[in-house]
Amino acid sequence: KGDVLFHTRWLFHRSIPMTEEGLQHFREVQGKENPVLKRYTIRYELGSARLLQGVSMENCALLYPETQGRSLDEIAAKNGPFFPLCWSAEDNDEISENQVSRMRELVVSEFPLAEPKRQEVRASIMAAIMQAKAAAK
Image 1 (cartoon, rainbow, N blue to C red):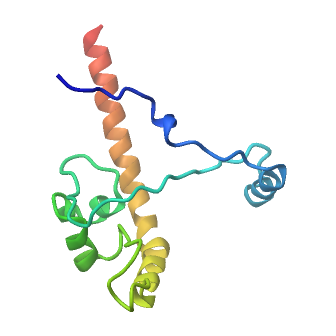
Image 2 (cartoon, rainbow, N blue to C red):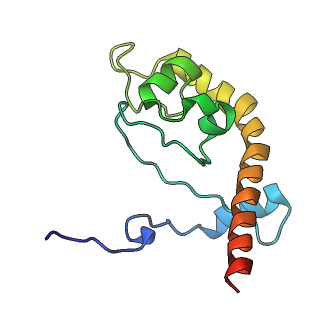
């Protein structure tokens, strides 16, 4: 008894088509005829929400495994704005310069360190999938 909402993730996450000018920009920047266009979606969550435990591709979980299971507010207070506030209690509801500075630091200094760990997690997931497929035959 209840409702089921069955849909693809693209129902609510649609991309805006890239203009030819935009495509040309990325061709020049990447030096490729068919550039890789990374897209992202923005989701909002309460600071009291907890980061999942277990296998994760989240930057903070890759860099700081002890953050798993903690609230987003706890992670932000101890490890930085991995999940930045879309508004802040500081500075009369303005995002503080300290938070912006820390976000820049994360992007430049820490996120690149998470990428090799993310690749390891992906490889282990794929290995498990391939092993399960082989065992099923």
